[in-house]
Image (cartoon, rainbow, N blue to C red; front, side, top):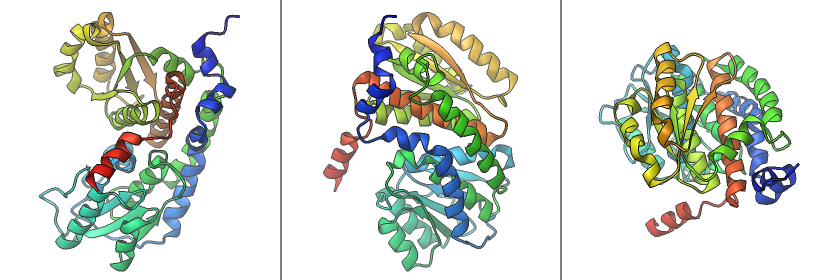
Length: 353
């Protein structure tokens, strides 16, 4: 059998060499992260309260995505508005009746620190999730409860902690039900998926095969409903881990604009389309995925449909979190990139400091 360069790059030993800091260990640790996140949140022993104004989740980057995934998981189980904020300020309509969850893995994110201060000025109820930093110091100084996170991770690999923190905050302030049982079941499910898709899996396993198909192209990830937030997760993980452009879109909106751009996509770059499909999508979304693939297929480097796995929304969401993270690491190996460094982000921070 001929050993192709792609196949060689995705074999276990080669993957280990391309990932010297062992980022894949943190990705495969997702089941344990979920369990630990629940334990940490519950151990904080924060008393519940009523928040008629809903929940605002303030965060950036790898911390922010937890709020978006939590909102998607809750879906129509959310009894009050849950809003994700990724900027320096809170929405103009924020009142004392709202709860503001400030999520920053490092505790040093300047946008999140600004939101923490703004919420305090407004008199809104605050809760924090972090590993420390100035955010933890400020919270403890002002008597704001802190949900701890495990240290030693890249913020983007703390997705279980940020998502569970947002789900826990939603339950505490009356915006949604507690989902501890569902999270435990999802963690068990993920252990099997990690075995199926991990570095020891064959080259035709879902994660390796998709990474090989996407290699050398610009992926555009599309989702709908539950998977819209996951499409953004895939995009950002490919950006940071694989060090390459990738973009996220949302159905049905992309059918009203972006679909036209695909008519000449091949003239600009090899673009690939990945549609994240959920079993709970409406039949019309299923139809849109099928028809959109037909229309753009001639001008795309490839089109792919990736389905969620599992029964509950927690299971299905985290099945795609795990798959997307692994695809991004396998793309990093194919690109000859170390997935850990994020030098452009660090350079930007240095210039702004």
